Length: 150
Image (tube, rainbow, N blue to C red; front, side):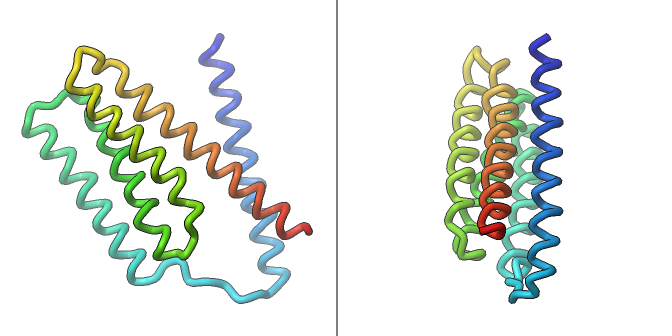
């Protein structure tokens, strides 16, 4: 029962993010205002470093014999740091907040992976990170839609 409710909530959240994206994109295109280049060289460097850290880190964790659940924590950590590093690149410090939370969830999961509570890592670093990302997307999407409407 709870799993089905969470699935429905996730689907509704995803649908709202997609709807807000389309609404914002349509208004920006109609306004014809200047568009910032989010995909600069600095962005590409950050994404390349993220890919290397993600896949290289998972290989290192496997070589060290760490439990498989550690990978979830590592992904949360790297993605969180990615948002923090992108904040000054995009000159948008609001993305540093979910980045910091994801980083902390990743660190928490890495710490849990070294204990007998390793089974909790997917919940702490996986599910909670997903909730943070979905909440952030809905929040920033809603702000963008309401700001453009005003």
